[in-house]
Amino acid sequence: MKLFSKSIILLFILTMLMFFNQAKSQQVDSLMKKIEGIGDYLLYRNQDTCFISNYGKEVAVRVVATNKYNYFRLRDRINKTRIRYRPVRDVSLGAGVSYKWFALDITFSLGLSNTSQFENTRSFDFQARMYSSKQYISATLQYYQAYLLGNISGVDVELKEGSERREDIRTITFGLQYIYAFNYTRFSMKAPFVFNEVQRKSAGSPVLGVSYNMFEMDADSSIIPIEVSGYFDPQLQMSDLSIISVALSFGYMYTYVYKKHYFLTLSLIPGINFNGGDYFTTTRNYISPNFNLKLNSMNAIGYNGRRFFAGFSLVADGFFSRLEKKLSVEIGSGKLNIFVGYRFGRK
Image (cartoon, rainbow, N blue to C red):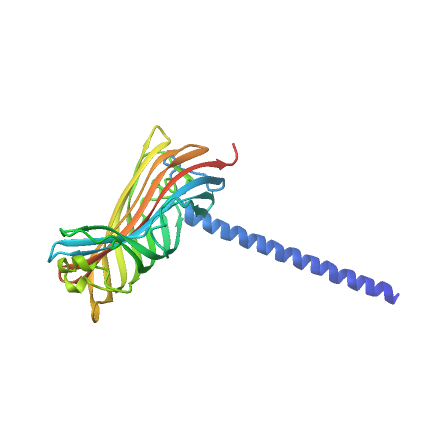
């Protein structure tokens, strides 16, 4: 009898545990559905289906060829000279996937660039971007060691062999950017760049952006070659530079659609940049806080069909900072993509 009673109690306890577990599981499922619903509301709300077709619940895969770049340029308006440095660029090839709000590209260098002219060169270039129909968020972290003198103007002296190679120049670039498209019901920021959506009719939108950038450069000696040092103000003959900037931008993006699936997206997003920092010549010099110009552009051209898509895109970002009166620096970065892809989903 006692064994029967214990069995009844044990059965009751197991039943209650199963009930609570089922209730808990239902709560978790309900919570996940609410989170998914909030995500869909934030990413896809109020889209005009006459202008935008959404395929976020289909998996899109693509093959991608990428060329990332960055540069910095010193401008001397006193002597009317300029000098520009860039690292050795290379093409990377890889694959990408998109699903709902998630998109990821993984690429590997093809080794096509000639790095043999440097004995010691290193680089790390991470660029992450997230698009919704109306929002764009990007993060950039770049480290480069070894730079080439891309071009120099305003001087009539030939450089000695090897002067254009600077293995001692090292840079770190960190940037965050957010852009919001006001006409998100008819204009999609995802369609020309992520291909979770299709822009069915031509449309555009004013866009508002905010950004933060940090740039660090250091070298073992002045970055102005000795043979042309007389053509540049002494304040530009620096061996390190640090700049922090915050910017507010406002511009316009437009996608032109031809025969339903061919598209051209162009944009111009200028802004006002507030920055400060310091640099070293023979002494440490501080950059007084100042306002200057910032420019961002996101462009693409290609074909975006029901299943297949292909094209070319260019995202470029740059800003200026005044060091002293008539002396300034320009810093830029960006990425070029060539891609071919396919969407898997229901017929």
